[in-house]
Amino acid sequence: MKVIEPSELVINSDGSVFHLHLRPDQLADNILLVGDPDRVKLLRGMLTHIESDTRNREFVSATGAFKGKRITLLSTGIGTDNIDIVMNELDALANIDFETRTIKKERRTLKILRLGTSGAIQPDIPAGTLVYSEYSAGLDGLLNWYEQRDKVCDLEMEKAFTQHMHWAPRLATPYFVQNSRVIGKNFNQAVRGITLSAPGFYGPQGRVIRLSLADPLYLSRLASFGYYGLRITNFEMEGSAIAGLSRMLGHEGATVCLIIAQRSNKNMNVDYSDLMFEKAEQAIERLAMEEKAVEMI
Image (tube, rainbow, N blue to C red; front, side, top):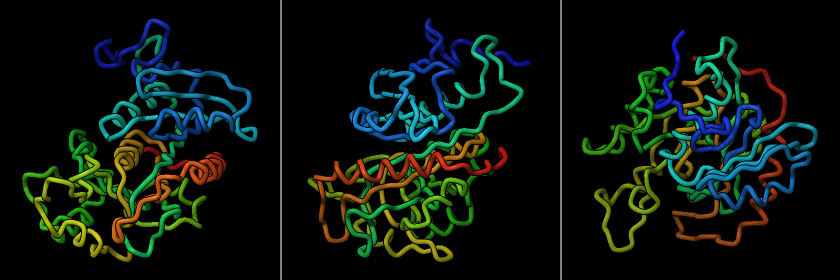
């Protein structure tokens, strides 16, 4: 049986995983991810029977009960590079025996939902809308580092997208991954579509301040892309890595976003805290609904 070396999986002296500072016993099966560490503090008030509170850098967590269901709240910070840390360490907490440093024989399936803020690309999606990512498209290239990449991605959708966008060869190859159907069944009232995970907030999301875009038609090309009834609905910065790494590791991963920016008419709502709190309560409740998990890929 392969032993995972200390340099590959770093375990702190207190038995917690290196970045998240969580021990295996502190992790619930239902996990709500948020970007902002302060949002964990806000949502912590929804939980009862708090078991643990941890903080290391941008990774803040709390595990407790929500209406009788065990939940872990965890902040990720910004970007798919952080999600690479979060997803691999969550899986290690669930599926690695920290004493022997070996993979457990019986695998544990986590339900992982990101609740984020987002900018709508389509003009008919107003601020305040909740969007569930049917597919997440990564423009960052993260999944391309993993051997199982093609097994979890929709290669035909990728091909159609890169052709439609006249994708520049100097950019990372985009990847398209379907989000969890198990979690998605509980968000039937949300708008659904393809969510782009961008590797930046400004240029990669088509924002122009002082620097011009390499492709001046970038946003209009995105808005006009369609694939078997699906269209690109919104931008954010983490969902593609959650969807892709979840499928590779055998977990249920998905993203749902509150729209706070309307990119077509240039409007922005910066006062969204109360609405986010309301949507967070709905998201936690739907995350904890009982569903049969899919098998590992």
